[in-house]
Image (tube, rainbow, N blue to C red; front, side, top):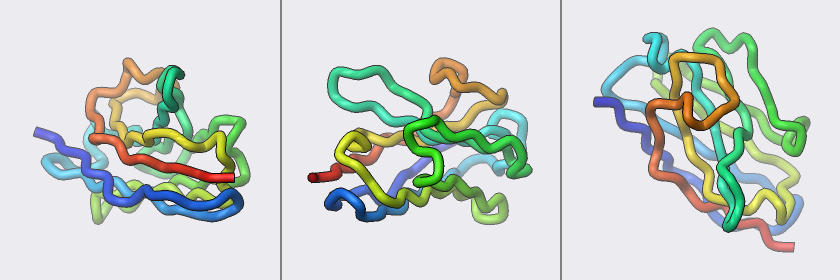
Length: 125
């Protein structure tokens, strides 16, 4: 059984920074079913959207346009951890953020098998 746990999140003012972490247990990162790790987010009344994803090798990292140059996704395979550093946060970044794992390199949430419980990020203006 794979579990993804997401400590972190919180509230900041616009322009501030937060760091999200996701710790996986039950499998190691370089197995097929967790070869892609991603962060999604979902704001009230909106669909869940991909924020960033990375392969176990670190190659092929992708960022959604709204977060490019502000967010950085990284993974530590030895610690079964994927992190997301979020800088210069904006009110429109306010959402519940989810860590997810997939065996394919996909932008679609339905291709992801394992999900964390979600953590709230609130950015005030």
